[in-house]
Length: 245
Ligand code: BV8
Image (cartoon, rainbow, N blue to C red; front, side, top):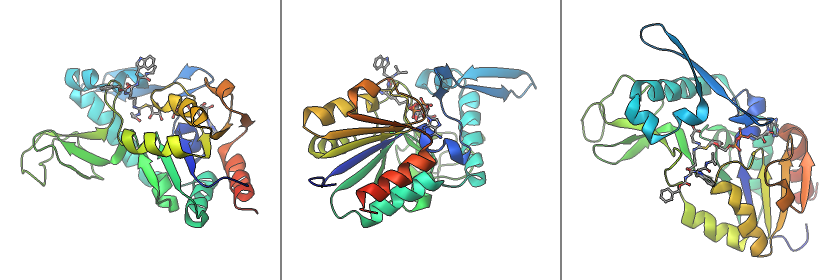
């Protein structure tokens, strides 16, 4: 691809869908999460209503259970061909590359991606509200474990950016998107900001823009080109194009 040196790729829940991880929305429908509380009562929650500081303050057990279940499920899923293709691009692309993911799963890194930024945090990280340190975490948090850093119990929360909280790495992302020659959006509905606005920043600074998605996103009209289909087919084909076969 002549003239392309700096690439920014934004990924969303759709790139992990074929690995068996639920998306937040598809075909305009918001995903619900079914939960059985400690009294055995079954509840159903819109995912978006659980991913907020207010939900955590109101019912920490519910929110911790939501993330404990998703963290535990990671051991039963694997990267798919789309994650593998982006890891190959990361290894072979000599220009600048940044994969900005909205996802909190670890499939990009398990596929081998290195130039990666989790703007919404990670399931396999915990944040201690007592000592403000973040640390790798693979176990449950719902049982109020002791923070290995400050030795206080019950202060650990998921290291996840909830609605109303500032995403991570925004300065790094703004710099990379402003310098990009090519901005590619993969598997995202374009429903959540500030991620959904990156394409406008890229266009403003003259980048070419490409969307790879199962269905047109809310921001499809902003992209020069949209390719519709499954990420596991579209992404390897696109990476082959970019790397010249
Ligand atoms: C902030 C972590 C400011 C949690 C997440 C009104 C207008 C504009 C903005 C707002 C507004 N009201 C409120 C806001 C702000 C809000 C927001 O955008 N709300 C939306 C709902 C309107 N944003 C925020 O609060 C953000 N913070 O603005 O802070 C600020 C300023 C100063 C000081 C403090 C704060 C924080 C947002 C982050 C929330 N956390 N995730 C978790 O994961 O548990 S967002 C959540 O949605 C997930 O991260 C998810 O990844 C993300 C975005 O969704 P997508 O990735 O796009 O996934 P989705 O399911 O929606 O779509 C999947 C797509 O894939 C579909 O299009 C589908 O067709 C496609 N697909 C499916 N299968 C495949 C496929 N494609 C290809 N192949 C397939 N096989």
